[in-house]
Image (tube, rainbow, N blue to C red):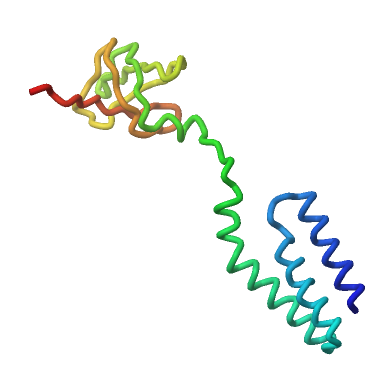
Amino acid sequence: MVTIWIVLLIAFLVVELITAGLTTIWFAGGSLVSMILAALEVPLPIQIIVFFIVSFILLFLTRPLAVKYVKTDKLKTNYESAIGKKVFIKERVDNRKGTGIADLSGQEWTARMMDETLTLEAGEHGIVAEVSGVKLMLKPIVEAKQV
């Protein structure tokens, strides 16, 4: 049985290396523990039960942590990276008239105000509060007054 657990361990590790998505590493851990039990001549049914218990414990207890810390290369999309950025107003932003164009990093976007009662004039700047579909939802820039 030790040989079978070694083969399973290697198979799970190879699949993990190929996919690199934290898919089978948990079962490799279960195989390792069961291999040790087989070397200690523990009965096969107990080895199989321990394999599943260890695999699922590893899966449910450590996967969320592993996913959180392993996937650090996540890039923000245009949508996520636009929020909080300063934009240049190219056409008056007026929700009541349905007008507004803003320049964000060299790209023109349809722009609307978060507060329907406010407007921004061409040549002014605004801050992206959120993105709604293909529209930038803006807030005016509130600058601290010098005393």
